[in-house]
Image 1 (cartoon, rainbow, N blue to C red):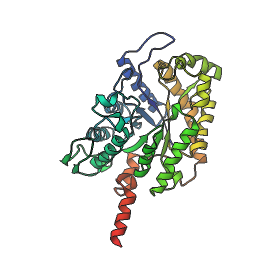
Image 2 (image 1 turned 135 degrees about the horizontal axis):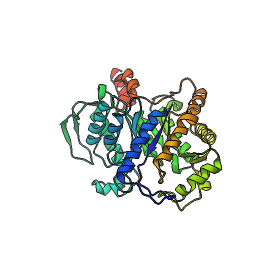
Image 3 (image 1 turned 30 degrees about the vertical axis):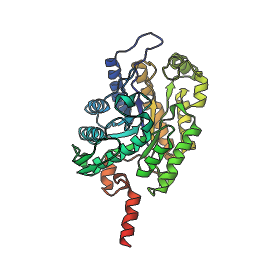
Image 4 (image 1 turned 45 degrees about the vertical axis):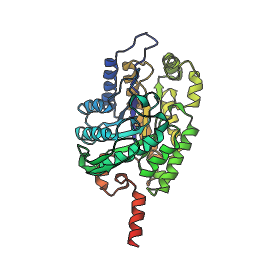
Length: 379
């Protein structure tokens, strides 16, 4: 199972000191967090993509390439790649280039983001969000899997004899997750292609998360990629840890109370009851996280958000030490002890996709329907 951290890259004033980091300081902090992830034995660092203040990660591939040059085994990912407002040609080329630089240590998560104004900024209509996600991703898959593409769709100019460069490393595109909180169409899209489904349930109760994941699992099986329990699932989460629950709450409370997204709303206690946010001891985090699998089934990736709401970077690095030393080793053992042998323990990686070959489901645009058409021709 993969464990890691993700960052939304917010520039937020520290409510305990009144100090606001510069954009450069925030970028440097995200880099330090990524390097710390490898140091403490985590598997994944993922960055968001935003194009508005107070966020800094507007160029994920640039940042991930910089991190790739300073790491050896860390898997580099995105917690959102804006498939709706970014040209699929740009995504195809940027992430294939990053693949080569990182020697395959790349995957990415498609999403629509949470900032409505980004649509008109990039010449798109938010009312077409779902159709954009569907059409753009279908084109992206073709660009990665076909050397020469002719294309005509609704949302971009046609392509005639177009070749995206560079080609994916080893002719093997990065593994793709589809991230969604509430859009059933995106869960369906992930299932149709046999891709991963990531539910970033940081603001939702576990019952809602289970409904979305179970929909994806049923449809994954419907498209004959494997059993429902073999579908590739990832979850988000938020933690803050201390030696005691009281100490963790004392330190984290001012950050929670003033956070840009959920500050000045429900109390810390109300929010931790209603969402996966866990503020307490490492043992509490372990118990809460293991409980996710009771609700959604055995899954393959767990990413924690730990660097938001103005938390100073040194405090975040201390949290990562606790994750790597006290939490993740226990979670690895416990999750693997309960996982049935036929259920994948890890998501596909570049190495596993290369080994599977070009006819593996994750390489094909529509594996089930292509197989059915071939069988019909044979008859």
